[in-house]
Structure formats: structure tokens, C-alpha cells
Amino acid sequence: MSSIRVAALGTLLLTVAGCSSSATPTDSPPPPVNARCLPADSNLIGQLGAALSPGISVHNVYYVRSNEFDHVLFMSGEVEGDGFERADDIGTWATDLASGGATYYEINDVAAQSGGWIPGSARGYTMTSDGAAESAECAMGVPSATGTPGPTGTKTAAPTGTP
Image (cartoon, rainbow, N blue to C red; front, side, top):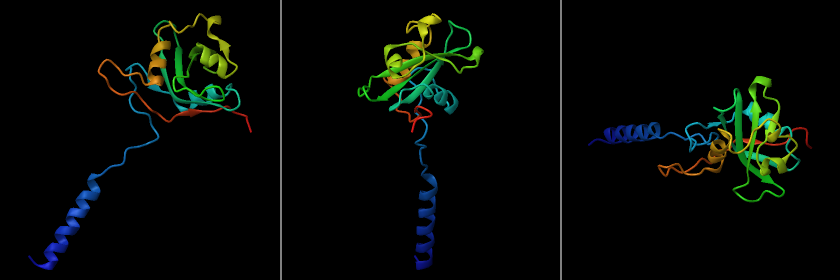
């Protein structure tokens, strides 16, 4: 085989190998463990972060639209910061989209300890409300019945207006 053919074959193989590899995006979370969950977008996360205490942030945020309450989303995420060192520190909140979605309600103790939103009991929202436990399940990455590993998303909320 001539040296030109060898060089051409080598170039072709390198080109094909380079085109066949694709990078996996690292800024989006993997599919949720519950089909009802969706990753929270930056608008929801930013609004949630508005009342977090200084030094507290929320990661891996998912939401579920409630079948029990019209226009209500339950959101859960892993809370990190002072006093929240455990991986299972999952906060759960609710927001009513019919009222503009700018008010959040604390559904569990972790949410209540991480900031200054309104207790969910004021609107009848609890962890047993449809959608609350499902959103927490996705934020925790609890494996589904099929044994699929849970999400490890990178969405983040941090308090706004803090130095």
C-alpha cells in the first residue's frame, strides 16, 4: 500500500472517530425518578431563592403539578448550607400559579428552617397532598420501581439580595 493511501486511510479513520463522539451536557439533570416530575426552570428557582436565609442554597430542584389543587406546583430540592449538611435535607414548597406564582408555601420542616415563606398549612398544603411527596422523591433521587438511579441535577437557587 502506498504511503499516500496509508495517510488518507489514517485521516479518514481519525475524522470518523472524531465525529462519532458527542459530549453529554453537564448543566441539565438526568431524567427524574418519577414521570410526573420536571426540572424546575430558572424562573421558579429564582423566585424560590428569594426568601432563603443567607448562606442557604437549593440544588436539584424538581416540581410536580398537583392533581388535588388547581394551578398548584409542589417543588422540592436539596437544601445546603449552615445546618443542612445531610444529603437527605430535602425542602418542599408549593406555589399557586393562579395567584402569579410569586408566593411560596413551606410544606416540610426543612423548607421551614431554610427561609421565610408562609406555612403550607395556611392553604391546606401538606406532604400528603398530591404532588408533594412525588417532587421530594425526585429531588432525593429515590430509585424507581425499575431500579433506575435517581437524578443528580445541577440546578441551583440561592438567596437574592445577599452580599
